Length: 308
Image 1 (spheres, one colour):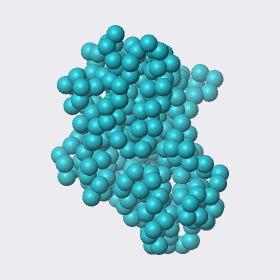
Image 2 (cartoon, one colour):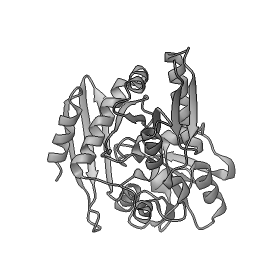
Image 3 (tube, rainbow, N blue to C red):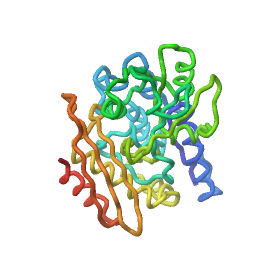
């Protein structure tokens, strides 16, 4: 049996997620060799411009700044599957690529990291908060219009060090899932007196796919598909399908400030969405929907239709 080659980005978080994937594959296929191939993507290389501008500068489609090189490796047969943080993956994939599975979802909330406990409400008036996400920026200003927002790039350890080193920064925003996967204890103070305040995900809506590690393959790669299906967490995949369908209906790209929250209870899929206009500073459109968990695309369609 030929080795299964797993492609991943090289950041600390990406490597941690690749390790999770490889461990799951080894449990399911103990006699199969699993090989890791680390690939540098455009988004990893271009840290000199805001994340929202990388695609425009490089001529890459949507969030393809974090997937383009991995897809080239898939197409050329250099890797069998690509491991992704699904919030970084374009809504619509080009042929012949397909998302075919996902690990169990981690916590979905956003985290405000600063030197004081208490979270968003305790930030002083006019505080400077760093985030490269337009979704986070618009929700922050919607909840706290007095805040001053600046861009930030780099992996998690780099961003935390910038917060420690730059006196003009009061806080940065990160994903709870990434911090947990990297081993940060959100209940304790970190080096430099930093504290993590988890924002209520029902109030501060996360990105579509946030907290989900997903897998991309070539559609015709039946062996890779079978391997991924063996380790896929079914409920997380349903949530992923629903949230990505909502983005597709919105025709939402990396510049669209949109948050979406979904969960399953008693075979019912519940969704909440919040969308800001890209061109003005008006408040968001919001909606909710509920339907059968087995019909995620239909529930997402209702969420889209209900936007007001």
